Image (cartoon, each protein chain N blue to C red):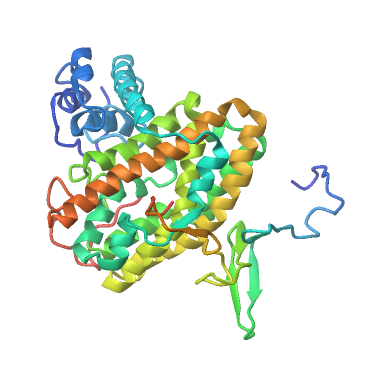
Length: 343
Length: 81
């Protein structure tokens, strides 16, 4: 069987589900049993890592794993069972506004005394905390905009044109050195972090995996296209002010020019993206498919739900003086010789 | 598209579209060069740019969402996308 020689290495298992999926990917063991899926905690490390492994086959795969397993019926069956648990937990855990207008409107006000992670990092974050934050966020930012690209074939007309325009901006407007994932790798280099795709998977908390898995879940299912659009809108709307606080954190700690640039760029870019996603993508989609309104609102509010969980976990660890990572980061790499791999 | 019909009463490419709203930035098709009060210019080649109209932006003339209403509650959100 052909397999990918290059690529991220498989992560260390976090329980029976992720161990079984990992073994199956290597051809050394069977898939997990339905009872094992039923017994796992939906937002827990084990189920989330098992799902992350399934999803990663759609992005970059893993070294030593056959790329053909992306469409392996057995593995897709396991993925569906994991997704069912995950989606049920998202629906149960999310308080959804009655309308898209209310869900979006709630994000268009800025708290005077914010208490979130970006406020913490701006006001008192230390360099080691910024490094941990970047390491965990790298699971998304090194494939920034990729989960959302899957929605493009599911849209048409105004919504498709606007979504494609925003994605084009995310992908650097045709310039490789401006691809947002590239800018994030540059930020990581400033912070002395390994920029290799997948390098920080073992370090990431379950709550971090939840945020990334939710994007993949919404992106890969046409049935959830409304939720994907709502999720994307929530990220774009909340990004500008959050990015400003993180840019201030990078400046205050002297993280470096590329670290500042990543968030400065997002302050401006996402102020534009917000307008386009609200007025063209959401309005365009709902004009064509008004029955998706509840799903759009769910996508908006589910994003707040999972971001709140991730933020609470980070702050709980940091306020207790603990690392938020499952495995410690190596000492900072030298800025000039740091590995930098984005292809 | 060079030969596409248009609903607009303008020849294609002859006019730059600007979108205004009472609350929020002015949206202008990029690329854009903006001349500031002191005569200096700033440039953006983004496909669309959001120009601040509330004068509160810390990245003036670009919108940074400072026009938004403020509330007393806590909150945060993802950053960077």
